[in-house]
Structure formats: structure tokens, C-alpha cells
Image 1 (cartoon, rainbow, N blue to C red):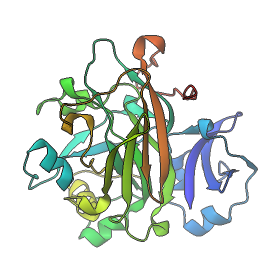
Image 2 (image 1 turned 120 degrees about the vertical axis):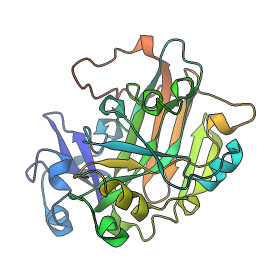
Image 3 (image 1 turned 90 degrees about the horizontal axis):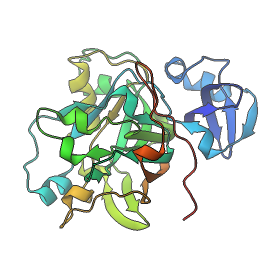
Length: 296
């Protein structure tokens, strides 16, 4: 089953994607966090209004996750290409709320930034409250499903003391295009992950190369903090990101970036100068730039 947050025109809310149609789930709850704890039978049987899918009306499946966490240096091939050892314990950081963005549209590069980078990743979406699970099996039961993430990074802002500052600019956390529920994925550690820049394949790996595997990550995080429905964990990026190439190859305005994971779908964005797009305002803005990329 595929679950999305959709702009219906008369409001925004949760939806089920059936082929090329969108089934309105707002009668079951106003937001994705209300839908995820429901049984698959309830969600799957709900016969709400149906409209034709327009991908540019898709928002981030969870537009305002309580937590959006990332894992650094979690692929063997990425560690090899940058010449660093794999960490004994997961290296965790937060992508702050204002970084959340839809699965299609634009990614902003701020004035003066020269090291904007892409990182295709498998994202895990939590489906129920999870705190201090007794083992990894119990932690895995809290997983609602999986999404495609581009962990956009500003390399020049990242150092060991300030990782989140380089990961959390407006719109630098796009994910989607929908949540593919866990029961639809036979093995989340056997999915091919690919990233293209302007049609050139840059990342081509498999989640089989994850160092710290998904149940272990959820177990570790939930041993310390309360995970709630809608929380997102980006599990790390394989080799081939711009920083790992020789010489490094970063993103410029006009570049088009696509990330695809088998069985989960594809997200796609074009890079634009931040000065060309107004940044959202408010105490906790959620970036919402859904204008379609220009034609190639």
C-alpha cells in the first residue's frame, strides 16, 4: 500500500495511492500521523473520493514530522571512497523541520554556497509510539513503511560540532513520493538505490550495503527518545555523492537530481538560486515549493 499527503485543492490531507488515482483518506484523520497507527485493513478498505494523480500535488508524506533524523557514514562503499572507517556506533544528526520538502519541485542553493551536495537514501517512517523496545524485533514492528530521501547537504557548513546546520536549510530534506508500507517490502535490505544528476548515474548501490541495519537503528534511537507516528529516519547514503568524487562535483543552479529506490519510487528536483524563490516565514516554516521543474 502507498500512502501520501496530497493537495486536493480544497485542503491538504492523507491519501492512498491506487495506481494513477488518489483516494481521499481525510475522513479517517486530518494528517498522516493520524493514519499510520490504523490497521492496514481499515486504510485499504476505505472508499473515499477518488481523483487522478498529479505528482506535483504530492507533499512530503509527513509534512511536519516530530523528528527527522539522519545517519552519517552508514554505507560501506561511501566509507571506502572517502577513506574513513565505519563507525562502531551510528553517527546520528537531526534534519530540522524547515528542511522538509515535497518529492518533486525545486531545491534552493543559498547565495555564496559552493558545496551543495546530494545524498540518495532510504528513509524509515515510524507508525506507532516506540520507546525502549525490548529487542530489535519489537523495534521493527514500529516501522510503518519506507520512503525515498534526498539528504541535501551544504558541505562547507558541516563539521563534527554542527552537522545539523549543514543538513537543514529550507527545502533540503525532500522525501516521498509516498510511504510504501512495510508489509509491501519483502526485504528493506535488498533494494537498489540510484541517484542521477542531469541524467548521469552518480550513485548505484543497494541497501544490502548498510552498515548499521534498520531494526538496530530504530532500537538504538528508541532506547533513548520516544519515537512517534510520522517520525522519519534517513538511514545513510552510499558512495557516489559529490563529496566522494575525485575531484568533488557539487550541484549548481539548473542541475536536475533524481533519486530512485526499487519498489519505493522516485523523487526529482531542479536546483535554483535561493534569491529566485521566497523562503517561507513563520516560527517553524515547512518548505513548500512544488512548482514543476522546467522542461529538460
